[in-house]
Amino acid sequence: MPILGKPSLVNAFAVPTRALAGVCALFCANLVGMELDRIVAVVDDDIVMHSELQEQMIRVRAQVHQQGSRMPPTSVLERQVMERLVLEKIQLQVADEVGVEVEEKALDAAVQDIAERNNLSLQQFIEIVESEGHRYEHFREQIRQEITMAKLRKTEVDNRVKVRDREIENFLTNEFSEEGSTLEYRLAHILVSSPEFADNAELNMVREKAEDVVTRVDAGEDFGTLAISVSDGQTALEGGDLGWRKAEQIPTLFADAVSAMEVGDISSVITNPSGFHIIQLTDKREGEKIMVEQHRVRHILVEPNELVSPAQALARVGQLRGRLEQGADFARLARTNSDDRGSALQGGNLGWVGEGKMVPEFEEMMLFMEIGKLSKPFKSEFGFHVLQVLERREYDGTEEIKRDRARRAIRQRKIDERRQSWLRRLRDEAYVEYRTEE
Image 1 (cartoon, rainbow, N blue to C red):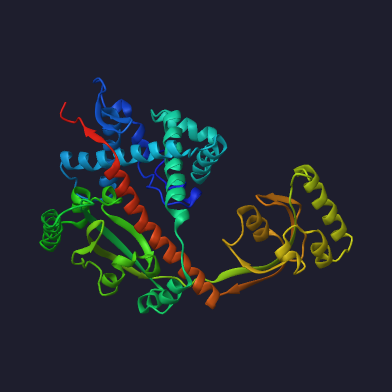
Image 2: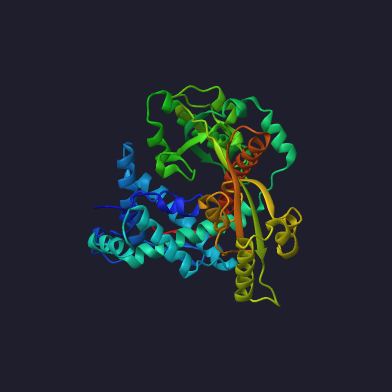
């Protein structure tokens, strides 16, 4: 019963990471053979072993087969897989240099989440992994590396992205973004990258390569197969598939081209500093109208500090909850006791709150509380709370929601673009020596 193919890690951490489809194949070292291992690449202070390359080749071949794409020649596939391994090694070394760590508790939670999403207990999950001839410790280490790279990208790229109000206004008046509020697009992407300091002759050579790709697709070659063979993009080994996206989630670079495309069309060559891009609109569908549930909620917060221990803060919240149960006025207690001074002035009232607006512990309690009931005392990163949900409503189409969606869409576009540039810079600055001919 193979169960490791589900992309549960992506859902568990809500950070962009590569699909786990076929991840079991990563651990099929017994299929590689008994030959002595050897170094196939030196990457700064790390190395890529032949066994690592072959394990990844097994996984990617299974993935290509699953996608239904034609298998590229072994030499082409090996080059793409090697480049992915090199980028991973570089990121893991940078993560070590800047002090990115994955706590054992976080790793345990990630593995537990994968097991639960496959409707298994942790012990059942481990038994299945090992019964298929894979080492659980190896699997666990791969998950650690995935989380490490995700945390590094968040620190080095995502957290530095800012969205200005003017960008939101421009987005909201853009015809394509309004049209795209109900439409969703599935795109495939090929990137033919150019050297950072390329001269005109080099740029012309790279452009010719990209235009040749367009010619080959027009002549009937499969876009996904070509992506696996020639693309330098992060989704090359997935056939260039970018997945389903709402119009506002499409990178700005591609938005104008996509708006004029029909399913099956490919774009002309699109240029930006990272190189030359070709996209294909593989499918389009009408998106569902989403009604947003909102909660009118109020709370009291007690923060631990130098004078108040966590145990004392919890006890204080418990005492306040007891007074509320006995009929004390919530607003009055919040004004005089809550350490969230912003809401305390409003009697603890946070107004109408939707999902994704609060820290996870607060949101979980808010979503499942009955209207009018007092929550039990609970902890978040800010301290200890007691909350009360006053009302719920279905909410749709307000300016606030539109602006929030616009802000998130713009931010994601920027993250996608800056991650590509960041990875390219890391790759250009790294020392990489290939030893595949030994």
